[in-house]
Image 1: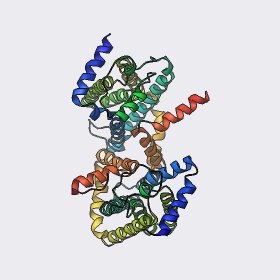
Image 2: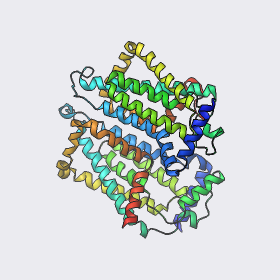
Image 3: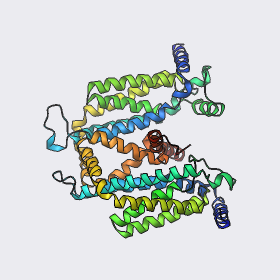
Image 4: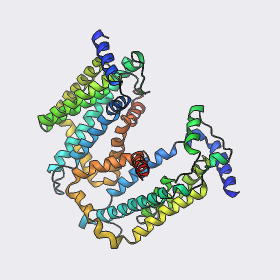
Length: 233
Length: 231
């Protein structure tokens, strides 16, 4: 099968690069995504100062970011609800992949990534961020595209997810964000509460910081909450 | 190490270790929650007060921001100095040599305690630059955290007292140096104003480092001064 060949090929390349060095790359991804969102949140000119033809207002920027986060949340909920339909075996169960990690870490790795396939939430965010960056600079979107391809390659080679799941996740994030960004004018009025961040920022930013902490650790709090919800229903 | 230190430590640890959940919560409070709480207070200060675009430095928000940066620098300096001294003292956490339960630790030494150095400088800043009331409240939090730090076996009582002294000394030193610190702090505020999309991610990175006990900042200082602070 083609996916098997892809996985083996990517795995061989990663072993040459050094499996141990790239095994924890997803932790850095969440942190970088968080910092990118913070940078964009505070970018743009304030109000009437945005007079240059290539500038944008801070409020517009914040509306776009909110749309992207909304798209990511919607896509995550969709994939979370589809989790039961995903393959019951991960690449690590089906293909004999080499995992060059110390024995204890290796055992933990295999336990984490074998068994029921799960959605690649980080690629949902990567897809949504690609759409978001396209609204700022084309070069940014191009860079995000290349980084997403790199992420797909690494995840495939490390045996964490099936390639088609990765591509579908990335596309879902991209399409959801693109759709919401296209209709943002219609929804703009909903986002006027964002202006309150300028009125009562000292009350709102501490909460945003806590959410950001959750994001940079790959949403452990959200995962725990969703697990509780799943157990209740 | 005095007998009192050991007795207090063992008794408090025995009391806390009766419940695994209580122990985990105390461990979390000492290792992470204190630093995150300080960062949340700094964020509140940073966005407090009325903004005035024509008078960035002397507007209410500008004054709050100067204090927020001062508190951050002050607390971090105290923490790093305490870590440097602790690394040279080399005395390890009691959990490693007195108690049976060994929590994960990243420090090279625990005397003086970095946590009380950090918190003491922060408390004195709050009390003197704002109002004694929040300072007293923060001091009470510090006492509770110190008790938990002893009970979890992360520090000896004397470590915490010495850490508090380091924090107080650093605060006093910066109090005398405040005139010279004013200019760089104001430059940071103007930089944030004009290059916010660069400064905010950088500031966020430092703040997020609080969830790792400022491991990243410590590593940077190690690299900069060729010293050892953490394992």
